Image 1 (cartoon, rainbow, N blue to C red):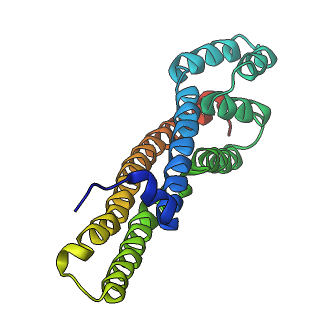
Image 2: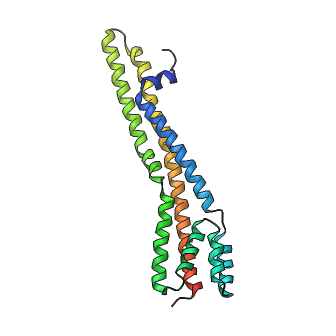
Length: 205
């Protein structure tokens, strides 16, 4: 039956080339999001909140605003936003912080849809490549006019590579997407907690 040459299959199958592109795209997005999430969690929110609270008690609101503006993290951006509107009524400040949290959520969700899409469509792309490959294998059998299953065995084996490739792209993409989705839920919960503490800390009426 011979051996399966992966390079030959890649050259002859456009679906596998698509899957290779999908795989590279998934890896790129996963690394970019990992770096973004890592930077977002590099700062201790409780420690920053305690420092700001101490400055506010000492009447150093401008210094507190300057301090939180030095760092770039979801908590610091939320604190900075709250300090900018610290003289706003309590209910209005609560609503403003809710909109700021949604803005932060959009920043975290950026590109995650690509991972979800790759996880959903990669198996179907692989299946499409398999169907096309099997059609070609049986067409070759019809054109040869002789032989049995051995004539199409190699062609079918090569066609099934597309299904395996689709799953190989989809499974990691889904796992990584779920991982980042879980981390996003944790971060958003933390931001809600910090928002509630901020409103109380600022003592708005």
